Image (cartoon, rainbow, N blue to C red; front, side):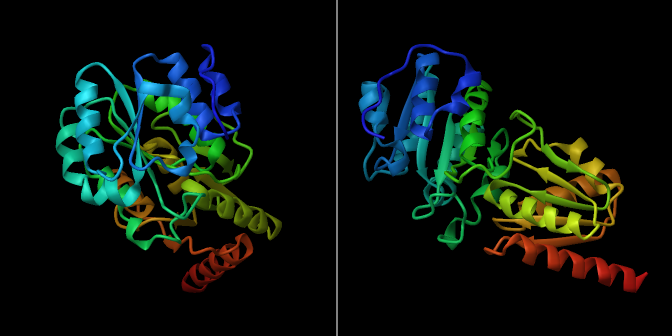
Length: 307
């Protein structure tokens, strides 16, 4: 990316059109004078940001856990930190600091967690990072997000920062998964397809596979409702209920732990609304769209045989 020049002020609507996450971050810093960017050992996707932001870029080096405490103190002094570290560090080694110093006092700090060696943000390369979403959802006042692709992440970032609340965002550099139909909004799911039949719940880069499966199923005459649950806490309860009530089968396509992930979110919603759908929890294990579609078709056949 090279050296980035700090751009002039511009509207939030243009952030998603920048060519990289780093440029979107610098553009946001131009809009918000109180924003500071923090990192541990400056990950590759922040290349050039240090030069562009100068003193507003803080790298703590090898002291990973120091990030959270330093961000909390900056937030108490009127700054808005956007903090970058591995998902493993934020959700495990620094978890107690996140819970007590950010969540409980409700400080406006955005944590961006990435999986080392996995540019897309998928978890195949780092099994020990599977629990970050579940752990962050357990912290009171903490917002949790997993955008589907690079464009959605860049669009979401200014909205999340502007909320003024603590947030955890799973980083992704994945290419656009679908043509997004709805602008990012906190607590709102994106409805990619809305036919009643099979409902597929997805988040993060697994949306690409889910949409490919939807197309295969549609070609086989199976109607599909596909939800992109990019906002995991708060989540879109109304969209989930709308997806569950008419569904013959509800599929949760996980890229993280089932406990605390989409399966748990679905269970929470169904219990509250006294719904009892047939559920097929699937793990996004690198399967193709056609393979995922075949597993869903097999589950439908089993349902018909049991009827």
